[in-house]
Image (cartoon, rainbow, N blue to C red; front, side):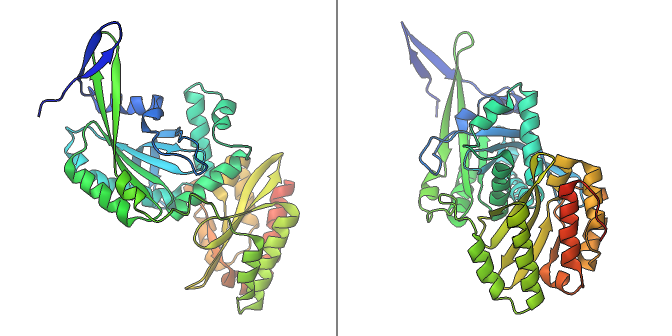
Length: 382
């Protein structure tokens, strides 16, 4: 079927003919400079969606031990902290039909595991610097009065919970891809999946018109209301209620003492994943630094304490992160993960179960001392 032109009416009628993108790089540059072409839908409070570029060619590790295994074309984020992963393909690329779907699911699964808040924040701020955009201006559209660290922690939590958008962008969306997108959108409860067709029309001079067509919205509206629309954060009372159900008195003591220390010395924030969790920022050198997160899950029971070494390294440097790691208790389950940190450049979330901590005398006291040493700028012995 012959494509009809688009007509622009000014002093006279001008016909703009369908014109493909010369190459994929031109396509990707368009999205990086003008993310408005992807702004469909709205935020939780009804405001128009405005995507902000976090990074182009965002690295996606395949495991905690590997380097960059994949490269996502674009990562965007909105003011609700919902990440948007974008893969760009031209219709002439045969991978647009099926291969790109598996590729995107790989990205989403591994991003949820290996993109800590500090990495996301650093990537966004580096992109702003490269693009010559003042950070104050860029953050003014995202934060809404929140601290930057709090915002990126929210983004990290949404990734972990699968609360994200996956966008397949092409100059023409094949029927096969459209069918897959609509199927995925019906099946995935937390993740929205769309195919965005961007048709380019050009005429005389530099005039170009970009016409977006969105596929997948019908399947999206049929979903149950997404939990990301109304953020329900874990409260201290909910954590205390879970703690009381644990049969081991030492596990109860450790969890309570950690949360008491967070309340007295730091800034605890409830998570919004399906399980109950709280993460804690501590004031260090005039900034709020994420240090640890406590998660408690039922069915089966799993209680974990995780340390935010990616954020600690980003804010305080590798030497301070290494000193903090050395001051943590030598619980076997945790020690193996701490020993792997140098190879990962201290960009990881090593965790330890509360029963493992409960099995070693003095582990809680060593952890609290290590945290206090980090806050005070001194080393603490385990």
